[in-house]
Length: 419
Length: 99
Image (tube, rainbow over all chains, first blue to last red; front, top):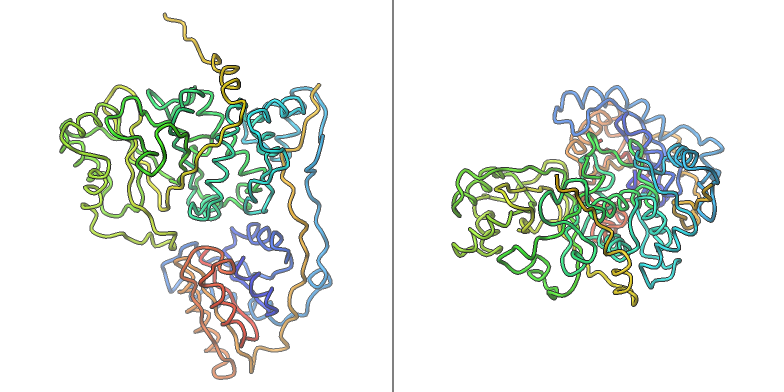
């Protein structure tokens, strides 16, 4: 609808043909741009339809409605639209016991479906010890509402996710990385393709926060991996305002939206860390975001270098556009012993792809193609994380009290009983 | 008891705008047919073109525009100005969205 609004803002009458399932999305988009009365005609043309006869027949049916929308005189609320109710955004919004807080937040649509930690003033103030930035510092505005991602709002959502204050520098860098236009967050967050933010963390902060990059790194169970991703999901929802089926039109959805955060297993990698390959210093902490929508795991048909690479290339096929290849340490060692570097691996993967294909569903920013990250624990599985966009990296800026903060929370780790 | 803060973000005040007065009739007018980047958009544009031509013949003038990128066209530095220029001589626009 943004294009329709653009036309109206240039003082030309406009009408859009919109699939019937996107009516709420169209209304929300028009309202978010300040033109809530923008007219559209719902149609039964299937999304992404490739059948011209079906399109022609449906257009023939709706043309009278289209002509009506271009010629019917305006109603009063179309001439002078009235402001709509808005959520409370400042200060205390509710007081109650734990269960009442859960119900209040869930009913307002402010959670991810799981119980949240109540964001009290005290808890938020503790979260804010994780940054030197002022609470009202504006990191950016998040689509589709252009909600202001201030440091305090990020902290409130971080508390809700159960994150520790040491996560704040990562969350701020994560929001910055998402808001970089190169990430195409504005498309991915609301797209029918259910793209999910995937974060790779590099540098000393992995150990400081116990960010898992080894066994089961992408499984639940690690506080940092779990809560950083969860906080980002809440930030996208509560700051950006992307609600399922209204603005976030993901057809199937994606469980990775709960959390997809990984530390690179730098200590068990034979190669330079991912962030160093892309211009960061080894002792610098860094976050990299991309927006894949699929994650598959394969066992290579052979454990020598050719067996590993051929399996990756064959599984990817010819039509992929962007892939993060998660190589487990044993395979990385095998490849390195045979002379392979991450760049050579990337070149080999690219070589087997005849051309960069279009997806047929629009043109996103050109992709860098492939990246290689060492991750996981003992074993022989490879992860292929595929999407259609780019990777964006940001340095993680630490507060002056960082060492003290890390010491305060460093012992907060699970100690499994050895049975 | 918990006294909790709002996680919802504030936004800048939004200036609400009414939509543009409609046409008396499409006859004698120059109608823009816009297709966004989605796969079905151009075929929809084609169908609208064909149907309007069938109904009105030379009584309406039809002009096409196809958005190549997938970003918000108005904020696109390359397509935005081209789109705005295209709009200048039009009387109304029918937008074909692939969804």
